[in-house]
Amino acid sequence: MIEQLSEAERADALDGLPEWDYDDGRDAIGRSFTFDSFSEAFAFMTQVALLAEKADHHPEWSNVYNRVDIVLTTHDAGGLSTRDVELAGQIDDLVD
Image 1 (cartoon, rainbow, N blue to C red):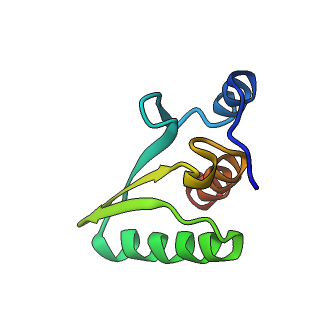
Image 2 (image 1 turned 30 degrees about the vertical axis):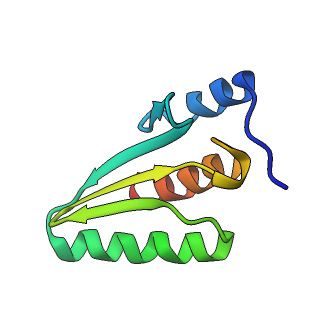
């Protein structure tokens, strides 16, 4: 079973994900992405979906026109885990 990150592990992980916001109440991280069009936003979501399927770790997300909001947490671990950090890094690689 995957384990929740310790405070020290979380702090180290968040240092490497400066664009992601930490939600202490949920022990989750989130980021908003804005694109030039709905088509670009949808293409991004498709790429993220493929990453998520490969990792067997799925985001909470929403899409309104050209904006995609993503939240990552590991429900089985009760909060943030290495799976969230790894997926966030892969998502960042798609846009950065």
